[in-house]
Length: 108
Image (cartoon, rainbow, N blue to C red; front, side):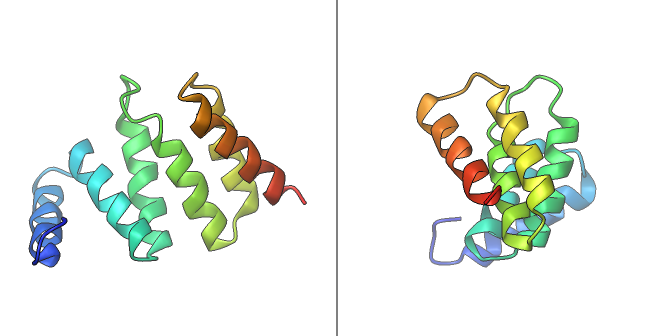
């Protein structure tokens, strides 16, 4: 994605998802790309799908991204839910503090 032709990478990942909509790695990268380009509704869709498929808990931080995407789309309730799910994960303390701070901001 960090190349001179990032759109080629995006198109390749979309093609992968077309053939295998359960490809968690493609969902993760496209979700991140959606966040970076301000396409928050697409990010919501991709991270929701990723989280529903992530039975092993390999992508717990996706809840943090999903919370941000919901916040950006104006859905404070779902954003707080996502941040709280992330807080249940016993993750990196710095990221957990970030999630707590975002919840406090959204609850104002």
